[in-house]
Length: 264
Ligand code: LIP
Image 1 (spheres, protein in one colour):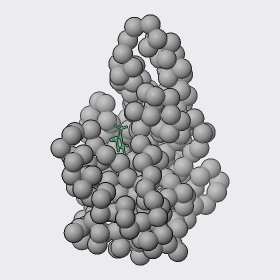
Image 2: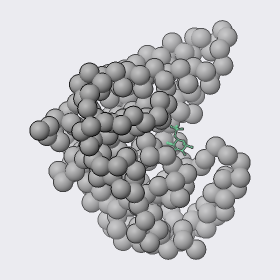
Image 3: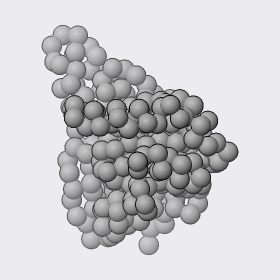
């Protein structure tokens, strides 16, 4: 019987190796961009290569587990556990050399659906800052060895709130309308560009809250566990699970205030 701690340690080891590859490809990629290939192709290649590394490690060390990855999709397993992977979360930051992207690795139990799964382990690693955020269900959230807690003393008027925007024009029009309701109320907005790092920032108290519509399961699988293990709440409106419709993350009292604003 594999313990949660063993799954976390494996996730950290794989995230470390994957982060080193992502960093290496980025530096090599800049040279290639300067000569011929479009930067977008560099990023896609790196995304795929990093996910391939993760998938290969897991096939060797956890052959009976399922897999759900941004680049290569889903594969069932016999163990009841699924590894939910975003190899490079913060793709645009990665392409531009902004040091705010992460390898996001989660282990969930049950159906690999955010509305049904039970997260057991979450790891979010920013190789540029060498920060390793990690959590095991029921055992707290950490940045390295430092225990994390969400900010619990802030209401909406004083809140620093992270958010993000999709890639489609029409969705951005809708997201701008929502932002026009939030911005006048809160302290300020931050758009970090990587959901996993937004969620890690809420867990670490670097943001008071985060919300976004249109996220994929791999964007938030690991970060959501960081938030809940740091004493926060992560979900949607009226008790819904976090998903494509909406994700809100904050301490419970601020969550309720944001939920009221976002559900208007
Ligand atoms: C990104 C998310 C971010 C969102 C971006 C994009 P990707 O994921 O992490 O929160 O605002 O539009 O979806 O594409 O970098 O893996």
